[in-house]
Image 1 (cartoon, rainbow, N blue to C red):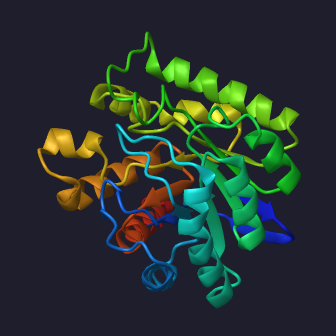
Image 2: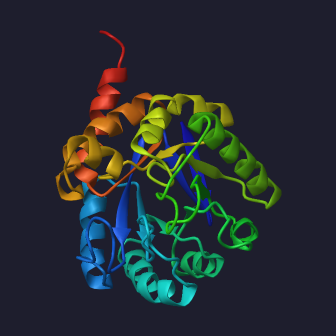
Length: 278
């Protein structure tokens, strides 16, 4: 399907892959700081890699609704020990840094990260795109309406699919101008969208293939699952699994998840579904 290149490494991706979420935060919407130190997260990382994760996404700033932005100083204190520990123990693992701060992105890549995942697509830090271009690593660009503090107050669109697609097209152009060679697009499920907006995007996810970029779907345990099913994130694994299959059928290349083992099973079944009749 595609390949990623970073600092002399190549990650061939002939079929959809799974990205495991590692939150080095005390206030994550799901794990609520259960694993927010390097030793604990190293164990989680080892299990995710054993379960089949192709990429581990390490973040130090919660972006749940209502959350204030975190400065780079505090963010770096949380994530650099985690990145260094995982990189030391699993030097071949592909690590992504989940950040909207350019300085964090630079120091994380220097510490062992191979991808920058930015929920703001450069809108929170004017130096982000130029920094990633200089780092010469793949960049995940996501759509968000507003900021984490404001995004769920009253999200509105005339046509959510057209508007998100236009936004990501413009961001891809900005990334190219900044010297970023490889861009992965993320429609931003749950970031400035109602449940109806999220499902409209999921139904039309295949239309984003017009951009010619790999596509990430981050559906794991989000409110678009919890609200219709009337469950909290702790009980949203079954719903996550169901929607991950839909995302794959709609062309997603990367599933960003809290539960790697179950997502790998979805990918395996999806591959069986695609196999031609004997």
